Length: 290
Image (cartoon, rainbow, N blue to C red; front, side):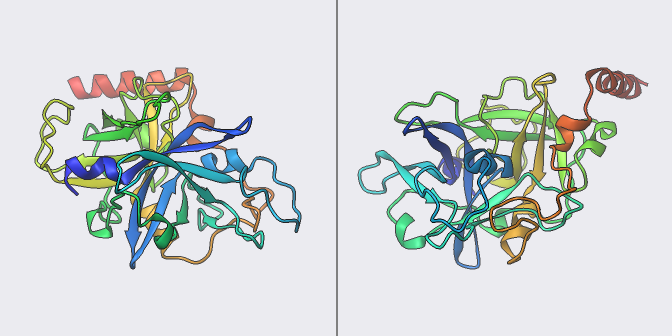
């Protein structure tokens, strides 16, 4: 995908707060097998459904929905598009991780082609994904593409260059993700933002990424701990692809873990302690100087 087209692949995600759509997070669009999907974070969806009771009653379609800011293809004005998390029979429409041993903070929802055909969106194709099994190297540059928390009627996303963190820290991300540094300037509400890289670009700063440069989709940004805002985490896009190509996941019909003993706390937020991390960073810097 050209860098000039990336904005059309992203969206602001809102939820109903006191009766009106309010900012919540980010998401982006991908396509596979002639179908299109919204990709965001699992914790974003669970924030909306909250403590949903196990009931066979018809769900509240308004409050149990994501509201996307999408641009009309004809008049180029933004409007709110409701994407329900449950259908009229109370069946869950979103899917997440496939293995109870590896909790991915990723969620996907299939889009209705007829409903979304009138919007000016451009999904990433699988050919534009970072190939499965590819892990980026420490200090390699990537870009988090996200919207500001207060975006008004015309949401415009921005580039935030970041780097893959030292190898010693990557154990916290697991095999399907990576820890990144220099994320302290990223807006709040960036969960679900896309992460991409540009080919043949030495320094991925906003000043030298040209509109006709080729971009590759790397992953989905899942957040940063409040006490260490300079670090963030993303899952590689292959996790979303795996969910798309499977008709199963490890959640029950309400979106809760099937295994009650499963620890679903975000691994980065749970395991990081500032003192331990500072020690790793100092060790890494000393090693690079030797």
